[in-house]
Image 1 (tube, rainbow, N blue to C red):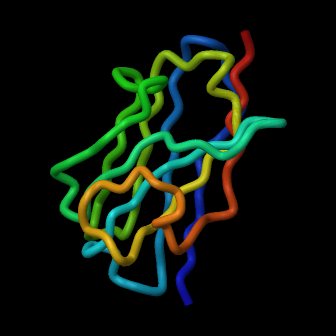
Image 2 (image 1 turned 90 degrees about the vertical axis):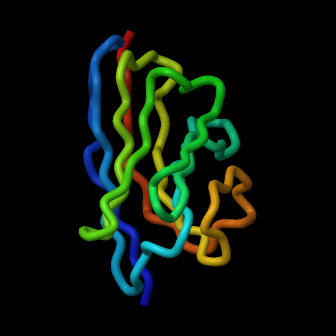
Length: 125
């Protein structure tokens, strides 16, 4: 059974940093693209970042480009999201996901097969 568990969320002030982690189990994830998405209150879930199976390629939403960095450690089956210079508008529940039919970067939510339960990130202004 595939399981994704996010951690690292919390309450921070604008300008602070956080690192989210996503521990994957149930499969060897080194063959699959993975990604981060987020959902703010009253809004639809949106793409944040994606990384290829090897970790060599990444892609970001324009809103986070230059501030967030996605990475992975395939030996540990763990995905990360380093978030710097956080803004109030980054407040959301952050979800990690895996796309088992893709090894390249994938920014389309529909192509992801498994999702974590989410971790709350709250940025105070």
